Image (tube, rainbow, N blue to C red):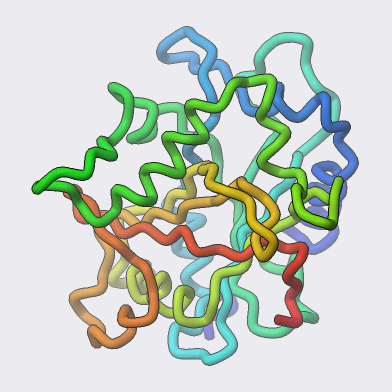
Length: 262
């Protein structure tokens, strides 16, 4: 495995951002998901986060694609808690992803994704979720994103708060299984033969006892490299593609109730 992690956050910084997220008051959460798009000169709902190309190369250097221990973790964090009275151009809420192999590496070598005000779901109403004869397999992932976009601003704290018997806990992160993570890694490729981009969209589904948070991050790999790997890698994963050829993964398990020990 390559030792290139120059774009990764320090363990201390990731822990700080995670604590900021956990200690943010519930009434402040809805305002975190608004950003000012300077190009459009308007306030927008945060929905898509994008990894910068140089950061993607560094992240790929930490991935052991054939490891039976590989699990991708999507962390939620706040860069600061000094909230502006106006809608910020650089929102403090941010997503981070890491390739985890053992629990001792929790919050280590986490790579940031930044808000993309011009993502596919911010343009012309986003993608269709119609279930017709020409429906695409990724429409189910789109439903999560559309549900997020259709949630009233004042209710945006609810998806992150537990609704099961474990009330009032806030989700920390999402863990993707080894099967899902291997498929994502295969789609991402390597720095030498790389996917075009890595995105994570904010989504909302239903909360159940085993998944007590309705928030669901949707991983999107643009121009996946799957044609160069064995098809069986994808047999136990989602990785559904859309009409642009992007692959989508939305089966992340929340932490809590899960943990890096799972």
